Image (cartoon, rainbow over all chains, first blue to last red):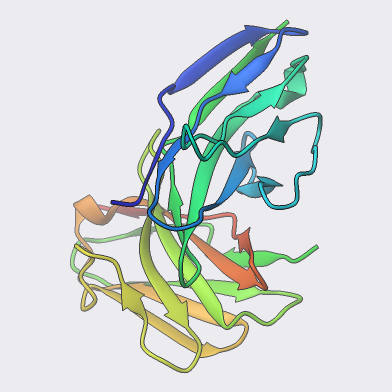
Length: 108
Length: 113
């Protein structure tokens, strides 16, 4: 079954601390994975795409096929990173499967 | 960047009535649009894939006769919730595909009384 799992509903870290938002997936083919972010009162927007291997706002994510994971990381959290983060899997014919999301709270 | 709008942003309707939600891609053409439903503090649930000029593809468990989708042009898809019930109250989000990237609308909050 195709599935995206984000085990943490809420992650609280202090400003300046490292952040890791976990994402595991289940997919039989070659996965294409994304991280989306939703800031308070704003629409969902793309943060990262694993193929592009970019670093956006200091965030990176590496696809680990052995562990079927695509964890989102940032070495030093900032208050403006507080948001809802969704991991998503693109499953053929442009159908996206979203994880349940993790709310990140960065404390001053 | 690409922008997707939704109208209305919120709507209240009485039980048994129908309500239409519009999703527009403002500066690009979208052959494919998606409709999601989001419950409070939960993830997005894909309801259907809307393809311009053809019938929508509904996800398992989504009633196609209740949630009517029309994608009559490359910039507009509509979702009509027919004979609405209080359990249809939710946040409905659309997205439009530009190449591989999804661009999301701001969402429509539907409350059925």
